[in-house]
Image (tube, rainbow, N blue to C red; front, side, top):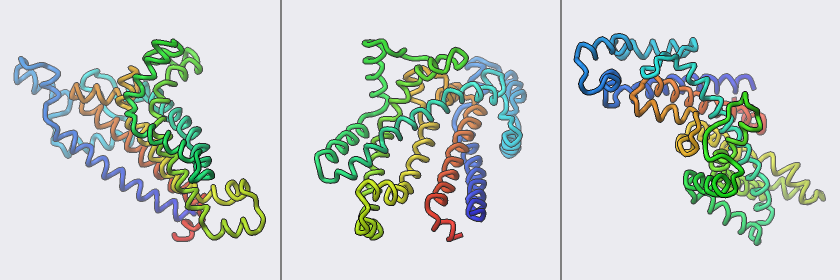
Length: 315
């Protein structure tokens, strides 16, 4: 088990190094100069040069890359060009919106998908299976930003159960904060729940056709015992992959939803930084999101080994 984890940790480290190079390169070759953007089109060349020197943009790209990476290792993400405040402070403020939103949406998605997928698998070929699959197809087809606007119209404007946007700070009460995240979380969770329930159904159906399941039935185990004691654990392996990928998507891909609901999260921060050519913010936040994605995948790999001991024996 230790060897398996060590191998995955090395892979994680290499992936982070490659990601940092790619992110820095892509952001740096993007057109436009932050100093010129900040000072406007009528700025003098000497003024632009002075601002570039102040921001450290006059250094060669290799020096800036190693300075950026070494700073991140120490927990220093640099200083925002636009707001002149530490990027780490800006991330700390925004992550307490994006992270709970992603976890909330993942919880809703899993809570819906597991029962739906298991029910569809046990009702294969029957009306219940068709109903669940039809609902999941509907959930996948609907764009989440459109669904978000429908939720706002129904539950915020018509019924007035929730606010149409904004975020209530955690200091004002956990329940109020969660309430302000409920509609965005549901909008994010719907397509993910549809995908996850389909994967759960397919994995369970495949597992139920295995020889050891037929052996368990031959020994007299009932239908529920076969599913919960034998089939479900093995069917969880592909499901864990999807859950890990979904959390990564929910963390890194909620930019549109955060814009719709005016949530001060990381996605909206990246969007604003791109429009303002605030390169250090874009690089640092995207690198943080990549770190979250790779770390979640690492956790999923370790979970594989816990669920399936055969993976541990291969190392």
